[in-house]
Image (cartoon, rainbow, N blue to C red; front, side, top):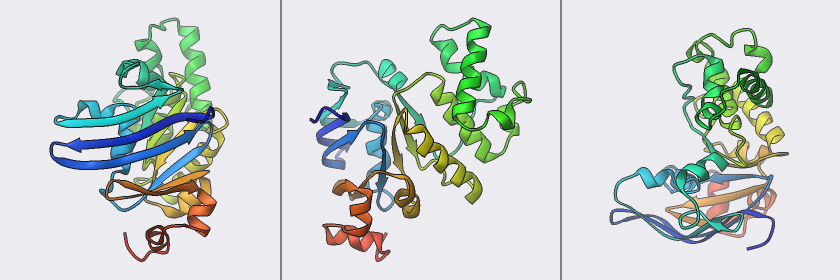
Length: 252
């Protein structure tokens, strides 16, 4: 493991019952970069992403072998899932704000962690909404239901909700696939801005998106990482013919 790695993945296998969904994944994910995970549907990208914050622990019949370290600590043996998920936040494909006010959505995590003082919560809510580039759009509607704003705004609100607990890593599972092009660009710009302070790992079906915003790209195919390299190399100079065929649209 090199010392700049945020996540170090060694010989990771994952089974659902008898079905092997991930095969011998080895990957070093660097701090404060955007790593894109690309590949056809059902090839293990989201499964891999959810292993990084142990969301797969919740699935029945899952067996995981191999090792994943966060800052050198084994996430299965040296951490509990709750503290891991405080450090590794997640944004899903469909915006999923809680059915409560915009303010309460963002304050939810800090409150669970014991922060009750209104002035402190006010600061966290404003900071998180500003970081998620949505403060100006919602600052006058903080008491309104989060379900009343647009899908693109809801997704940025979910990012703000993730940021409120001050994670180090943000996992994004196709965060723009349910959004219109303008909202998509806003989320992409936001991701580029956030990588100054956070490590971002993003599953995307949109290859242009991976090419536009990521530093590194991993190409997944039937549970294996075929190639993992700088995004520039993956798109302009892939080493594996399967990567080239996928990038040029010959399959997938």
